[in-house]
Image (cartoon, rainbow, N blue to C red; front, side, top):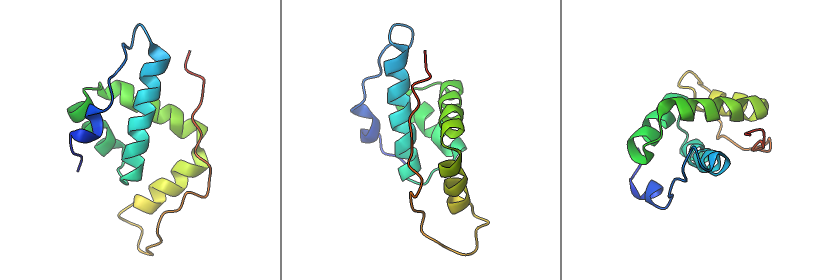
Length: 103
């Protein structure tokens, strides 16, 4: 799945002192999960195990990204679904946006 060195480059800022910086790091790590074609549960487990990020935080950031990128996530989740019988490589046709609504 993941190797620890994917996360050691990230020094997590203090969530309470620098919430926006902390959330940006979590967003970056979620994007790495997406590049590895992981689903939400796998991403939550990986970030908890390798980056010590509480599952609730990962879920909250994931859901916010999903809200801001509905088309992207709909295509992504369809592409990684084991029920998808017609294999088509996943392509990022929709631009992935990171919101600045974290305040």
